[in-house]
Length: 230
Length: 230
Image (cartoon, rainbow over all chains, first blue to last red; front, side):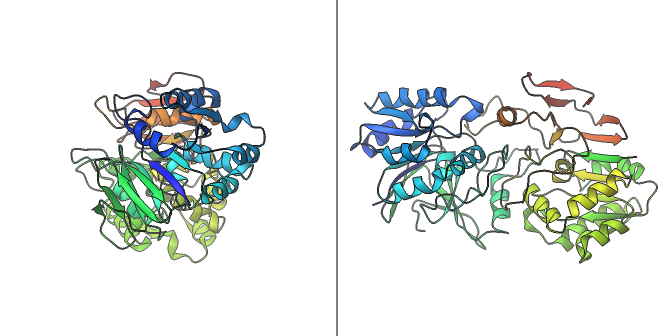
């Protein structure tokens, strides 16, 4: 039975890494004592070791050990040995390129589909969707495909941000970008605001946190929702 | 002799399409009476015809006729017949995918390198750089490559936006994204604020508009500059 925790962000403004969600994370991972961390998105280009250390510090507070997937030369071996996964945020293009390099995307998908718990934040949540085509990240590397794990039947837009009514800047709003997405794709998109996360078990999806989600479907006006029904 | 006008945006807040730059555009295109418009980036998914109509209206004010490149079934033919080019903004991924579909990127590059004037705004300016890896756009389609025309020896970041000191949102700032870019790439990046544009002739590059540009180079602190020396 699939078990996913997909969060919009790792960190709320002014808080520590995972602080806002730590009790939910403890509950989610209650049956494991070690979590395999996927550091490949490495935000700001920090090293895999440094990024894993950040995750390990947060998980130590809930008495979980963290192992970096990058410490296995053979990623499949690391994936096969994992009790549970946490994939951190950063750049989705970098993450996806790396996950394709040793066919890790497919191995990861198989283990998660078979019931190994998977938690993602930001880029780590994006890759649970059908494609990475609704990432906000800059395309700093060229991955072999934009297809991701398809663990849920929709795409996620992390760090979803409402349009700023006072903006005098002509860069597109998030809503405009997602409208453009639907000029070329039919996949529904769940816009997850910071502080929101999805708990997915088998066929139920719970939206947690204080915000509603903004839902984008092809040929429909975007709308707010407390439930995810795809 | 190469002749380029590369603008950050087509439209300043509260103004009409190309209004802020129209006299410079008239001067840039003074030797031609017809401009071939490349509508492929089609912002918000509008049709190629509608987008061309928007460009045609603005160019009518400076007595230039506009032909949409999409009206040629064979894009090479349209490119061969053009007196000058204007490539509008929208989604860079869509634009690049379309330009690769009939090898138009290569044909376009050849004609521009041989002296046919080229003007771009936003996505249209991005493709004058070495790669599209510093676009702000959402990857809504998967192009066969991120390589672009390499008409200048750097990448452009259009709609460059300074960090908002009051933001409580954890999505990356533009500066963070460009720092990540340099964890994987050596290409210098010119951050062009809205209202700024580059005039390129042979080997001289002039920065026009009232803003300085923000320059990002690998292993250097980003800095402001009134000149572009790459």
